[in-house]
Length: 228
Image (cartoon, rainbow, N blue to C red; front, side):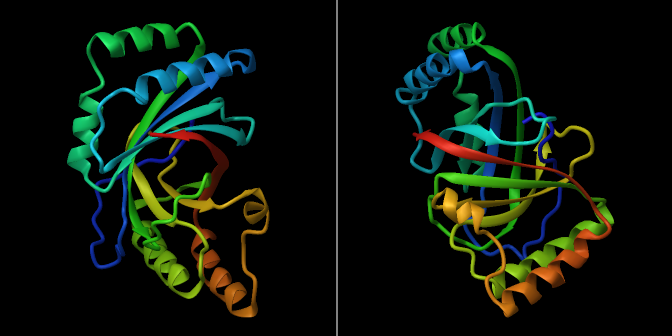
């Protein structure tokens, strides 16, 4: 993701529900002619590299995005444990890793990485294959207000999949400071996301007031290819 998420060190324990993730994303720009080769290299490495049970690795395409986003694919690594995520990332080394990186460098035009965590989620454990991120530029003074408002929204509106708000700790670019991330069961559900009743409309309208003073940066959608 050329301009994704960001983080300031911030803890809002009173608002965090459950199933909050730490994440590490690697964004890849790949020519269409090389996609199958890259997918094979990713599968070959991550399907055989030892991984703890509380760490998830997913390889996805990014078919829907703005013109500023160069990445075509992403490798997302997540865990509810920051220590497990850090340990797994630190395990990506050695001869097999060096060979994998060497081969990937022949097909990846550009790459970048970012890492961070959710601040508040709806606690859903549903694993859906389509995920969408909305990215904003938010000042520190606005952050607490937005998180509180988002907490009210996810209590009053039933999201079918997972939804959360968070920041990135590392790898930010161009001032993005906050993201909202949601998942969908299929493309039809993604097309129809939004308020479905008067109560839903009122809940979204109330939350939208907090967006009046922040800058929306971009949105992109990823589609799962394979998980490990």
